[in-house]
Length: 157
Image: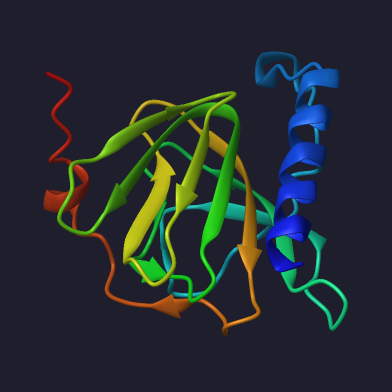
């Protein structure tokens, strides 16, 4: 049942993305930018628009996050995993012990359960994502900030 709920949300997100024009140069956003994130779990400026809160009927939280160039999350993990839908700009995603991956508009990343990772904008582009986060096994576990050395270790060879 839980896998069906996540699949339905992903399918709805893909349909939504395919039906909407998205062009940040013309300020045509799919979702409002939301509130500036002021906690210590992010480096740089990022904004969150909560779209769906997890509840007793559906344990998935959905939010749109806008990262300024260079902004990123701390290292963190999700006990029930996370899905990232890239809807604008160019982003980075990295799992602990693996190289940084570039994420482009229209791409989807599946963050495995309990695997430390981080994500955010590339140095020269904002990044906008929709994050679908399972909450049935607990909330996000936050770790240390991503250092500048870690962030700048991207090798696109």
